[in-house]
Length: 271
Image 1: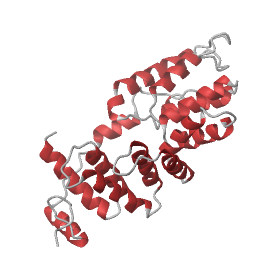
Image 2: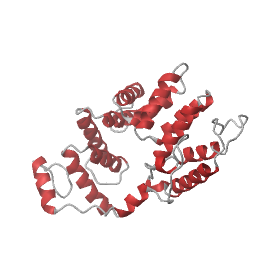
Image 3: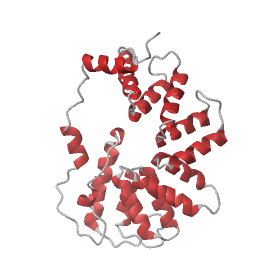
Image 4: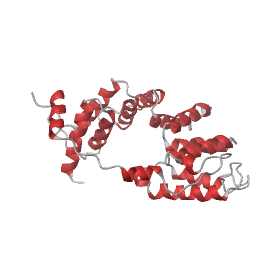
């Protein structure tokens, strides 16, 4: 993509962020922090965005600030403050922060219950790796039912490692095969379907696939397997959704004027 195109996208993000759109703000922060777009002061603009949304008590903004404090980007590096922001974001329900905190807790003795609770909250909100870690720990302590559920949720969230682990588990390995044993009966058809799910997730990993219809493809026992035509709802929806239309110049001009922004760049107009 050309630099000019990225700068145009950044202008849209700036205008949307000024109108309170947090997702636009995070996308803009990524472009700024990676040096992809022009800015009078990229790190300053990034931190100002984060502080704006922290003031609105947006969980993800605390998570963003935690990373900037961790790296010392735009602010003085402060690891204790960084961890405090991560925990604040996690307590407010941000799934990425919950996953991050759980990973930190995995290295701290006697915190397994809190760690698993964090993983579970994160996976239930769509974090794929959290489901894998939740399931893996459950398996290690012999809680196979939770392990199977965790992997199942992780597959829904698009994690192909989870699909592979369930695929192997439904081959019915003996208890001696600790890596994949989850007290499941051998089920050839479930293995075949999970293999197709794994291949779908692996081949499309670059576009962030999900399997929201996993319960219509491979529901967990004792549910019977329904008919399945081999297709995936996520992919069908993606292929049938038309590209987003470019906003009109009139809309951009109006939204910019409301916030005192330059419609060409999305930056504040010079006074």
